[in-house]
Length: 317
Image (cartoon, rainbow, N blue to C red):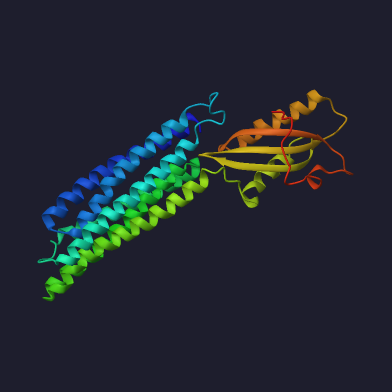
């Protein structure tokens, strides 16, 4: 990831931190004054998001470090590890919110929350939805798992705030029609918020763990890479291509066939051009390893490979 891309990612992380601090303070203060369990649960969720945003920021900065002897492929997986930590935090806060709301339901509620709790939740929904759209689009553009995890964290807050708003509204309706039993809708909404947070936390941690295992891109995702290599001058055919995710970027292994009568130096130059072209054309590709085969129509390499013993031998790049 380039300096410019890291700058954009860090900007999004700082924006998330600032917004979550503000929302946690506002929702917490209004939740106490309004006497709303649902709003307090939503405030707790935002407070945890502050820690999550800091984790995202730390992960991005760790991923920015260049490759070294112990980490020849760089530190990109720090980004994915940050996403896992964010997910775990979401699960923990989900349990805490659920426990608090269940206790309120069991003990009962004497009076409904104040009307301005509903206003605070409406504002929170609007802000969080805007943050989700911004962070998700940027995370996709930069191929950052941590930013995408943070974006879904914002979307979870949207759902939780909507659920909390429904509970507050139901409790207020109970006051208007003199039905005290409806007051329980406020803590019930807090319980629903907990379920939403737990569900999203589980989904994100599952996806993040999957990404740490050098997930290979599907055929449809690698098709554009293959088409790009095939168009490079001097390459007769692409014998095989593997593209694996490594944190926020992709490492490509490709086998190409060239004219068997060219020199080793010429083959090396074609491999070098292939690497440079892929890394320039696709900003998420961080490294390319190229194996050059002499083209033989009677013995095509891609049709005579044992998948159990297929390895990339001498690489030119």
